[in-house]
Image: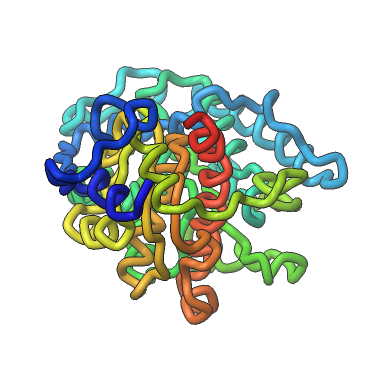
Length: 382
């Protein structure tokens, strides 16, 4: 398929004089476009969606496969199983019905059980921390409405949508709050969430969190744990640290991520795949600047594949951070990403990868690479 035709198919600019593509090359309907979506997400949806993402709907401790060469993984499972079992009735509101979204009706808080009311999973990329965190959520003996699961970014977005006091009232009726990918690179957000967690601990909410140790810091002791416990200030006594060693399972024993495809291959796959989106990468980056990151999950609603043409290096830090959030939402929803242009491990400059947000960028590379591998079946189905 000529490059000009591929561009025309992508953006609906093919004129009547442009030769039509063979009918067996494309589907009847044009693909979707992320750039055409501007979702509105009400605050109550943000609360209702604080559950493990679809990728982790069915995970359990029993489905976690510890690396036999990493005994810390097996040990972590045992500790977390015991932690979940101890949350059966230990909560300030606990066995009663959950308070309404507006937080009216306060129950008298019973005495909070002694000992750490939180666990922190400390480890590198792809060792299964999110799998274990989601398994903890599933294993905790409480109805889903009394448990919350979200990333650090989603939690800060919730505070932004509801306000601090309303977030405290909404979450203090929970038995467990799980925070995935606790971010330590924004002092303001870290202090905000630390203060929020302090209020929730006072209300009897149990906490669980994960963060990442940088690849270059593995073997140098509990780098991430030390940072985490320092940044949450007075809350450190409430957390038990579980070190989880191992290599990134997304690349363990698997082939290298496929090389980028051509624009023509990506466009052809987008038209042949029902529910796929097709966007020019630079234009998508511009569109993300106009959509609040709290809406990126809704931006991907219903997508079966994301097809991107002309992937280029990220031009600046703000754009890079927005892409990280989108990568997280796509990974959570298991949406394969088929792309042309540069491979995903060349998205971020050396300066970015050595800077203060490097943890986020390494995570995005790992996740986008996994989704690019998943997209191989999309390309081969055409």
